Image: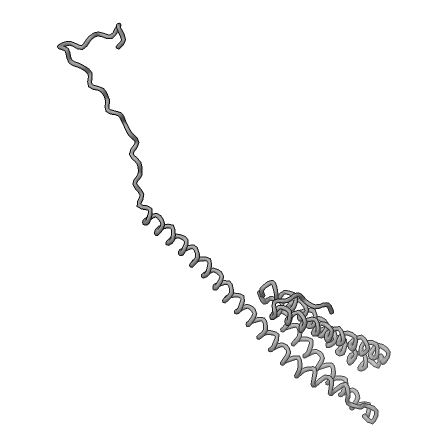
Length: 206
């Protein structure tokens, strides 16, 4: 005791403060493990749910893309069937008036084909597709661009014929054939890319 501190009067003694002990948190181990298990299960459900939702969304995207391509091919087949039959029609025995009518009909079919390909290109290019299908989408859009150019050139050839510019008409027909071959090559690329995406494999070399 400090000698300078006064003695308590009446012989009273200052009681000692009891030793303070920090209470230990009593945690039931089984409850803790159960809570941890529930948390892990909840996280797993969220993860699985997210994967399933993503898979469903990607499936919907692929279905929409393939549906748009199928509609495009159906329309293109009808137009190309008409224009190819028209181009194969012999004109040697036609009169001048019949040749003119033949050229006007070719121009009308080609303009329609150009509009059809432009319409389908806009739809297919706007499709949201999974990354694995991006190559197939790009190839098909390129195919439509080439086919649109072919129809445009066939239309120009018909217009040149009507103007009696036969050199330009033949030149445009030749360029249209080249654009058609580029279309066919792009369709081959599309088929290869699509097959790789469906199989989940690397795209084989062209």
